[in-house]
Image (cartoon, rainbow, N blue to C red):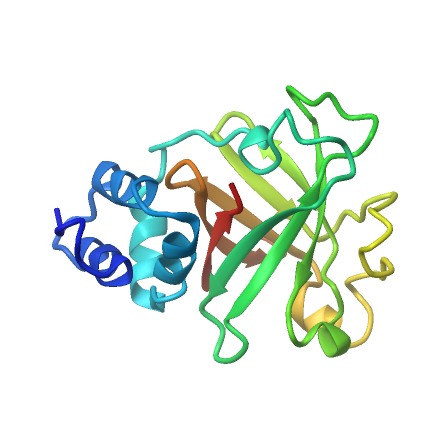
Length: 205
C-alpha cells in the first residue's frame, strides 16, 4: 500500500493502477484521508482507473440509502456529493441529495437529487430519484423519475427528455456501487445500454 505521507491523489492512483485492484486497500486509503484530500484524490482519477474500480468493487460493499443521506440528517436538507466523471469536458460536478419529508429516515425507499455543474444553465439540472437495488446491494440514480418536491434553494424541476437535457440525462439510469465510507463509483446506462461512462462521488462528512 502507498505510504500515507505521499500525496493522496498519487496514492489512490497507484492503487488503481496495480495489476489487480484491491477494494479493501482502496477503501482503507480513502477512509484515512480528510474530506478535502478525498475530493482531490477522486478528482485526479482518470477514465481507465474509474472503470477498473467500478468492476473491482462489484459485490464488495453493499450500499444503503443512508450512505447517501444519513438517518440523522433532517428531511429536505441538502447533502453534497462531490464528483468526477469521464466526459470530455466539465468533469467536476456535484450530485446533491435530500430525503423527502415522508420517507423513513432509517430505511428511505427513495431520495431526491439533482446534478450541479457549471453547464446547468445549458443542459439542465438533471433531476432524479435515487432508489435501491436491494438484491445487488447497489443504488440506482433514475432520471426517468422526477421528485415531487425539493428544498427551496434547489433549481426548478424540469423534465429530462426535453431540449438539450434529453442528450445528457434523458432515459438514463446510473448504477452506484460502494467503495468506502464516503466514496461511491457509478456507471451510466441509457435505455438499459451501458454507455462506457463512469463517475466517482465523495459525500461531505
